[in-house]
Image (cartoon, rainbow, N blue to C red; front, side, top):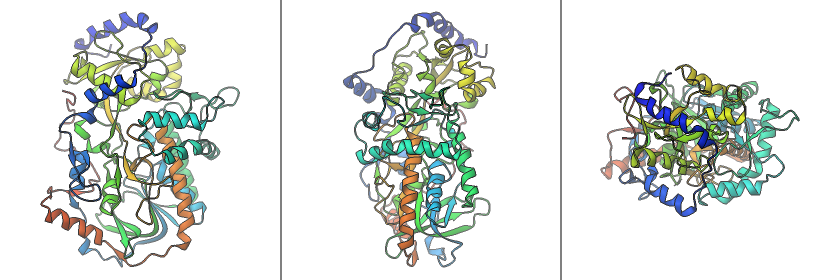
Length: 541
């Protein structure tokens, strides 16, 4: 048995209660019960964890302290020293970000005849896209419809979503599945040839998740990466963008990138810029671990905000209910919501269920935090963290022996490295910072109020409101990546770029200095620094 003696008593209680739990039904929360739970236990509601943005378009509005610090820091770039006549690359469309949204935008812009370049911080493909396990939502089956998907998504976001963006999401989703399958994505199918769909997440009333095992995002990104290279789209890797460039008419006209190896500044001039930089998990809001990849440091938010773009719901962070809590080497890594959809149960130290596992993510995460922090029913690990059991063996009991090994290959392999058999032994979980619900304000085509600047994917806000439903993130990046790429393809032929300028950066730096806001740091962050941090925080004490 891989678990230490200190965890064995609660494990025995879990095993003893399993048969009784298999027959137990737990009702969904009423709206009033849900709101009370969120307000008392969700991390977004904790006192003192937010601050007012002190400068810029959203001045006076709340955001996490970690993000506010980035927004209140001067640029790492010295605009006055830049020679903007020394352009290294001159293209029609610059895509910043090498995940699924960026690759999709690049492909559709290229198909319209644009000269396209992708600039990415890490290797092309390194992104949250490849870490998406559960699936991609689309209403492709009888009994489902865009209208149902629309209502589910709006309800999941507390009806704070942009209706126009949600409509685009749900209506375009079947087209995206067809496009991805045509490119070669091997979505799982039933014997009759129809898509095998998962009821992958809380808040959905129909099964609409299209998946490739539990490595859906990785599979899709492999295909998109090959297609981008086959289309001979230029990609510059290890070149994070550090500032957007404007022209004298106030149009976004490219970006300053930095070669991560040589620290040389690389100027890219473009008629259209599409930001697809992802989220903020690696700034570790409230000290939580994260499911996010190494490059998710809110760079797009900082660059767009300095250029004058407006942010929406940036104070709303999604915490995935089931981040790994043990073993210590994989703290924070995602355990797919599909595991709960297929029957896995959340069980406290006394062997009791305490929430319907298919509530929306904000509710389930809050219920776990309540069980651990308020009720003292968590299971302690050797490093002092506390978590809740996810009783995964129930999956095989409900779906047949061998289901886990066939359906959850990635997760089974991850835990097997630590002698935990996912099909025979439960795993310990606790909420992990997972998704940035808000972002830059855009329309249903990714267009911002800044001419020439589009933002897609997690860096954009509005489509998910204040809480995203599982499986909608992959849909989001491909739907709006496609839409932004098509729009870029339409406008670049009629676009002329004027004299390049970084005046907006100089002015932003000056406002910080004159207001006495200087944090002593610079932004964007680009890369998290773990050298002087405790590697394994006791984050929920």
